[in-house]
Length: 97
Image (cartoon, rainbow, N blue to C red; front, top):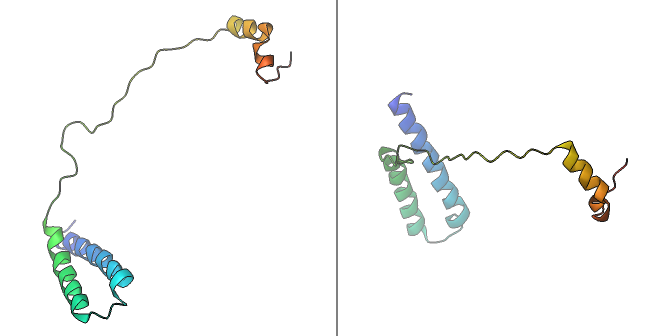
């Protein structure tokens, strides 16, 4: 994307966020010097913040790990032995045979 367009989008996004903070917390304040100072500082901050690049990853491994689990095989003889012993009926489950 064009560098100037990207800079404009980032500056606009940060200005919208900072103005939202102003509208929520400072718009009803009667300290007009503080309001004016905040608005000017937020404008300067919004123009400066897109110039800084903050690395989000340290490079290399992304931190995703996987592990293979052991395979568990259940045969029909094991299931039938459990049903015949009645342990399923005692646990509150109903088995229709």
